[in-house]
Amino acid sequence: MEQNLNQIAGKFAIEGEVVRVKPLGEGFINDTFIIETEGNNPNYILQRKNKKIFTNIPAMMDNILRVTTHLKNKILCAEGDPMREAMTITPTKNGQLYYKDEECEYWAVCLFIDDTIAYQAAKTPELAYQGGKGIGKFQAMLADFTEPLADILPGFHNMRYRLKQWDEVLAKDPVGRKAQCEEQIDWIESRRDEMLAFWEKVENGIIPMRVTHNDTKINNILFDKQGNVLCVIDLDTVLSSTCLNDYGDAMRSYTNTGAEDDPNLDNVSMSLDIFKGYTEGYLSETKVFLNEAEIENLAFSAKYITFEQVLRFLMDYIDGDNYYKIKSPDHNLVRTKAQYKLLQSMEEQYDKMKEIVKEALKGSS
Ligand code: GN1
Ligand code: MG
Image 1: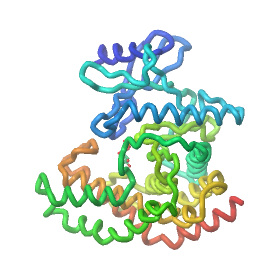
Image 2: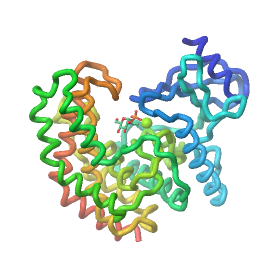
Image 3: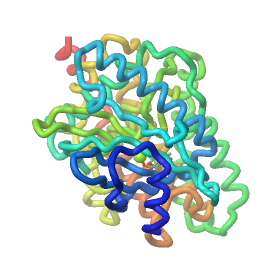
């Protein structure tokens, strides 16, 4: 493997000699490595992209190039540092955005941005505020990006599509797990109409499609040593979607007082303080371009995306664990229950969430 990774790194236009290639992080989707080079040369991130999930990797890389080029222009205009404030793709030695190996695996490289801090959780409202500003600014810089992006994950946050997948998996019940999940299936069915009603506003254009990140966990933002947002990373899922999905997904991950797959449900709840911090940071950057319907539905989007995650984990469990990497046979069911506890906590605090959005809007004017 080591030998192989070095050979793959050698296909890319890397400055300096490669010293070693080591695994990095624990993503559920791709395999990630760091390429360390000798001396003062930059280091790089090497990823084997998950071709089962990303079925059109050339189009995905092309999306990333177009979006990062747009961001870099904006950063230059604002006299920022485009090499540190936006991701930089490192092409192969013959100028391709990815390398396809003999086993038809796809590899891509980007520059490693050093002297940064990445957080695994937003422990304080101040940090959540910075995270909100980070994604808000990212969306704001892309608000005038009007060329269409390739739809590399069709139906990603589309509830009509998700529920169709769900109905199909339930009808098939391929590994016979449906019978033991009656209670959890009801969690989905009892909210079906409410969730579809939200998606209808997107279908009707009341809530517009924009360029969005689609994986807004805090560990996808790099901070500088002073604690300010520097750069939004992991752009694989950059798509046309709604800004609300980015906001909602951030709220799903930031506000959880427990782990995404916490086996102890007592640990799991939504922190209103973190919700407030993020919302204030986010609106300070996005208030200028979001429309009325987007603002009105911000609080709902946190419930929407958390519901979607309950559905996706449970659907994968019933389907026999084909999508998410798992660490135990019931991992997807444990995840389902933990995300459902979070959804319930949001439902209980929904009125307060809406109030916070209203207040944050006044505060950011
Ligand atoms: C996946 O691997 P990661 O953590 O970047 C998933 C997200 C889920 C998330 C749940 C392409 O992202 O949509 O919300 O797991 N990404 C894809 O933790 O499906
Ligand atoms: Mg990710």
